[in-house]
Structure formats: structure tokens, C-alpha cells
Image (cartoon, rainbow, N blue to C red; front, side, top):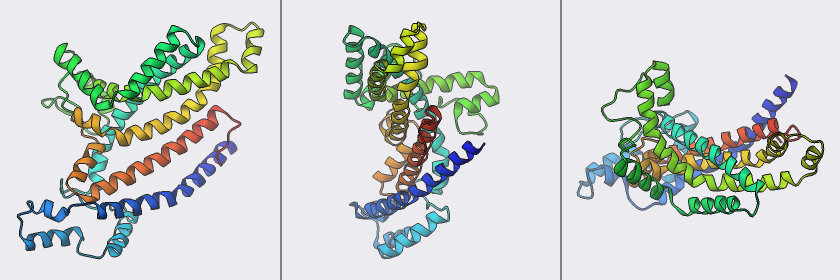
Length: 343
């Protein structure tokens, strides 16, 4: 219990030390949105042909008639009180929009990361066990191919093959079929909500909708995970403790899994955390291709329409998620290797 309490205290200190960075993200995003070309009041006032009075009314509604320093102070006060503003696109509070859409992005990203880890770790281990072999060259070629192909290209190819040619995948039109009924919202994760509702047909339909976009995202991040696994395994396999385990006559699988892989997995944990944070904020192309109602596509639509509040809320959300994920990675790293402490 003492060790757990110390870990929690250190984790709290790390989070508090990240608050200045979050504050910097707030200010930078706010100022950046103000210097971008375009007037959001004109956009929401029915286009450039709108009258000056109508534009001025919308500017007052959005608070754009005040000096920028005053706008910034008001914005920081609102954020401190939990108010991220109201979206001019949806007419709803940004916090409500993000809360409704975040589970969709998390479900997609977590599934893609799980697919990537289940593929990359075995590939990296196989390549490390046979360095210079056909397997090793094949894994490295696959990794290079995955990095070179953008996610929207792989997504379109998957749709063409599995939906258009083979007819195995459902319409790429969101999280569920447009005619399907949704389960009662409890977590926002459809796979979990369908299970809680006991609707296994709905669960299978939601899973089929999820697999292609998740696979599109996973293909792009398999490469860094497989490469770091291969490099870590090569170092671990050449270490003294692995040679000692071999000399003791331990089974081959036990040496690889218990000794080599356990030590090689530490860098993979770090990379997985970075990859997850990157995927969550950069999956906008996949969300657009598959009409996925996530936070990234929501922020892109807001950016194109010069709707400041949703973009600022999205950037703040991603920065917070990045801090929390890195903190969790540090904690997991300490659990996997007791020699590591959280500073």
C-alpha cells in the first residue's frame, strides 16, 4: 500500500507539472484561431452577401467585437469554470458535443491500437529471432509499405475490396447501419452498450462497421511498433541474462517469452502510448472516409467553417489526453520494471 500511495503522489506531481503546458496550448490555440484568414461571423451570417447589421449581431454573439486580450481573458475564465463555449454549427455546448463524440473516437482508436499491437509484437519477435532471413526482410518490407500508404488510401482500398468487390463489409456509413436501432447510451462505446443491453445482433453489426476503419488506422501504426519490438528483442536476445537462461537448459519458449520479451516490451509500452495519442488526434481522414462521428471530424468541420470554440475545445481535449496517456505509460513502465520510478 505504501508503494501504491507513493506512485499516486508521484503521478499527481507529474500531472501538476503538465498544467503549464496545457495553459500554453490554450493560449496558443486561441491566438492561432484569431490570426487565421476568414471571418466566422460572415460565414454564419448566410455568406458574404449578408448585411452588416446581421454580421455585427453574430460578432457580438461570438464575442468577436471585443479586443483580443479581453477575449482571451474571458476565454480562460470560461475554461476554468468548465465552459468551452457553444458551437455555431450544432448550436450545442462544445463540452456536450465532445462528450457525445469522444467515445466513438476512443472506440475506434483503441480497437486499431489493439489490432496493431497483436500484429506488430509477433512480427517484431519473429523478425528478431531470424535476423537477416526472409521473414526479417518480409516484416521490414511490410512495415515500410504500411508507412508509405496514407490512411485514407488504405481505407479506400479496403472499402473497394471488401465492400465493393467481395461484399463482405457493410456500408461505410458510420458506427451502425442507418436503419439500425441504437442501444440505451450507458458508456458511449457501442460494443459495450450492445452487450449491456443483451443485443448480440446489434453488437455484431457494430463490430462489422468498426473493423475496416480500425484496420485502416492499424496498418499505419504497425510499422513503428514492429520496428521497436524487433530492435528491443535483438538487444534483449544478446544480453547476458538470456545467455544464462539458455545455459541453464530452460525451454526455448520460456527464454523468449519470460526473459527476452518481458524486457523488450518496455520500449514498446512507451511507443504505444505515443502512438495512441497521435492516432486519437490524427484519425480525421479515417473518420471522414468511413463517415465516423468522432471528435476529429467534428473539429475539422468546425475549422473549415471558422467555428472557433469546437477547434479550441478539441485541441485542449487532445492535449489533456496526451498528458494523461503519458502519465499512464510512466506508471505502466514502473509496474513492468520496478527499477523505474516516476520523477
